[in-house]
Length: 135
Image (cartoon, rainbow, N blue to C red; front, side, top):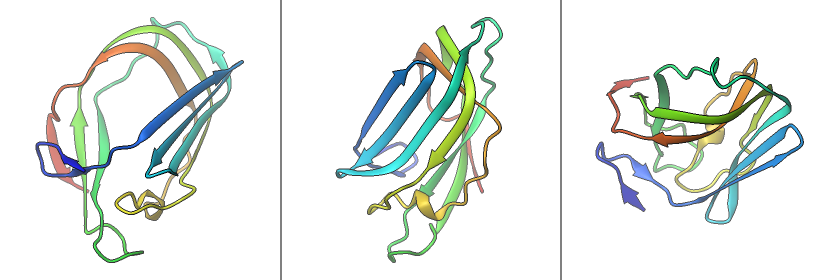
């Protein structure tokens, strides 16, 4: 386990991304368990000149010390990365949290179904958070 500047735990894990004929699938594994699976289905190419990622808020949580309990602290952090896009697809989104794991209780956070998904191959630079606020 390592810590980022605001003292939120970061878990080391693996991210696997696979693109197959218009579908893009991603899996996040922590301690050998898949904690998040996301996919873009029936993707079609879109012009990279129209792709725009506005500054966005990321959900950050501190895991509960009591198993099965909601996170005691949830906050939103704004990140403003710089992107250089290479190619992009847009399609139907799927997200699921198949297996809970210690320190990654994402399955306890309600997920609202997205309308679309966009996958972009890009170079990016990730700065520190612009601000962090309670959720």
